[in-house]
Image (cartoon, rainbow, N blue to C red):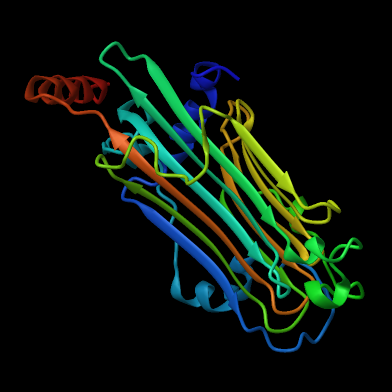
Length: 294
């Protein structure tokens, strides 16, 4: 991986995908102190299905013909108006025995006057497991809070264009959250502070001595991937750039099969726009008017 991240292929993909959020957008999904689960095997239920009956009564859509749309004009946030962005990612997991896993990264992309893009990236991963300092056998099912008889599966197979957040829990006393924010912010720092991170390192990973707790993060031309793996489940964040055949996607997933776990996925994307002179604004207005003359 070179410093420009393969001419910022991931940067262009993230920018094009994020343009759909013209006014900024945020999403969050969380669990807190879950009551005893009725079933120990959980399958994902799409959020939009939970209130489908009520929405059908409140929303009415009417089709508009091409003869009407042909005379309409409007403005939107296109990928050409984005000059750069700052992406911050953080996933962390704390087990009841004191073990923790953290994966964190930041990616900054900027465009200069010659329309050339440059990127800076920082990555960091750490696993701390105090139980393995005194117990060669590693963490046990009891101390880690994991429950081998409980399973939470199916979330990895869900494919969504846009932003998806899935939380699957089989256990008691768990606290977790998926949080994603996409907004315009021209004052965002070029590369956010990531304690202990290596500059311009596109990936980082860590694990405990027995290998049953892992943390990893990677930036590449095929997207961004963050993964935490523990005896009690997994936490992932993935960004897939858009292509000509498929729209881009941001996915956050929590799977907990245990008790008293604390998990969090956090994503923040700050988009930066080009500074336009008054002359450029007039030229853009004239161009849009000419395009509407058919």
